[in-house]
Length: 229
Length: 275
Image (cartoon, rainbow over all chains, first blue to last red; front, side, top):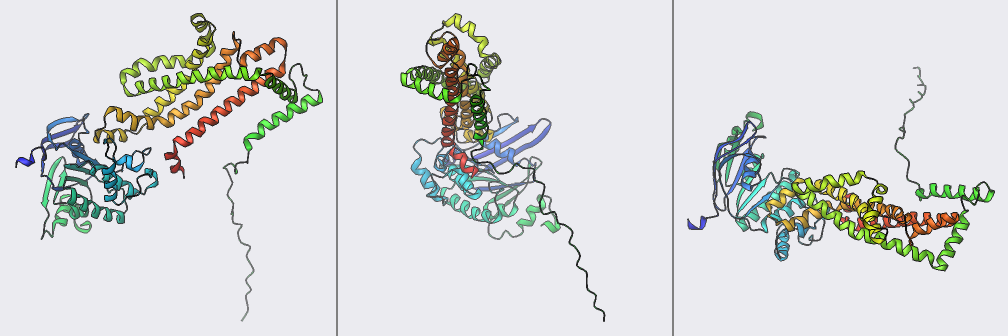
């Protein structure tokens, strides 16, 4: 499709190594525009390395391969990463010229209208992460990279955040790569779930109606059997 | 049935209170106790005749002398000259120190060029620089302001640079992901991030400024508090010397309080964190 030029996310033969250790091993991945992909993996499986490669944050890492991403990429980190000396609205529109109106709208979208003048330290963890979401979405990304964005939140807040993220993604339609170690989170949110193991994609499941045993499948791919599943 | 009356057992003494190792609650106006004691000894010594007024004038003489100096306008004149020197030295030294810290903190080449000389300057006492500065710049205002500027520059540089290098690298990474331009990056991330360090440097800088002012004014001056004190030494007027000492102390104290006030305002984002 002609409209896909510059909107597709494609990784081919991506290799990354830290010293002697091979983190990503000739990895191939394609994410369609608007597709929500969850990336599961155990600690050290290379999830974050892949995300950082897509975010262009790995200048100093050795490796090769092709990475093709849309022009506008936003990143949400595990920590909200708000500048503590900037008020909430200034954090949202950081680096955007005259984006104040859009910033306010974006804050209202994540349910924080009226908190524009607050300092980040005055917000709860969940609220801070919502500001981080607003900061990502106000830039209208074609690809949203999220590195365990809800990992530091309590279970209840996390469920609320799932709903919020789903609504926001439906409205803005970015492609999403969500890195997580939570199988249920992956199933709840994604169109497609990948399991990364030893720098390669070890399993891939497309989610849709009738996908019942996926949870067990995925847990198996993550090396969890019996009780844990 | 025999009734066994249980003898009340003395309960083992419960150690309800732990040994207290923390200092107790702060004393109100505690910081005044030491100076007040000092003043009391001074007054007592003077009144009882233990302190020879030729060596140390009694406190009341110092107060009346200060009054006379104010009435004659001499004190204001000297104070103005001193404040002007300090103000000028700060006005030049602070931006210069900040600029050097920025260049040195943001570029490896800048650091390679700037950091060494400043560390060397830091190790050289102000008095050791004086002969050379007098040879180069004479004994006029330029020399005095230069001495203060050079003194001020060092703490501003050291603390701003330190604050800048201490900025969390995660914020730098964030700036990269939102594609901040370099100018915006400096304005929104670097400067505010280095601000706590800068303000600490500022506190040292104002103190240093008054310190170096004394050094500059005691040598070949015709105005300023230092000159007034040096002149008093020639005539053996310990009361005037003491007025100068007290004045220096107060000026240092007030300027530090002013910087701390600015600090509280400027770092309000951090104060909310402290509760």
